[in-house]
Length: 49
Image (cartoon, rainbow, N blue to C red):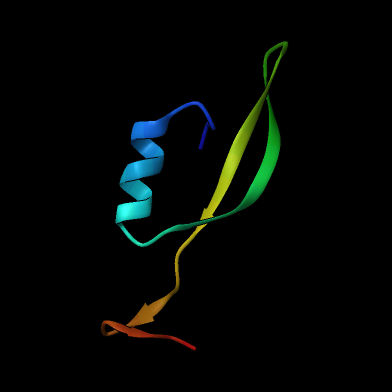
C-alpha cells in the first residue's frame, strides 16, 4: 500500500494488520515506497499457529 495513503493505512491497522516494512514499487517512471502490512492467519476465528 502506498505510504502516502493515511486513510488506507488506518483502515488496515484497525482491521488487525501491522506494518512490517517497506518496498519500492515502480509505476511507470515513478518510484513509490509502499508499506508492507501483514495480518495473522486464522482458522475458525483462532490463530493458525
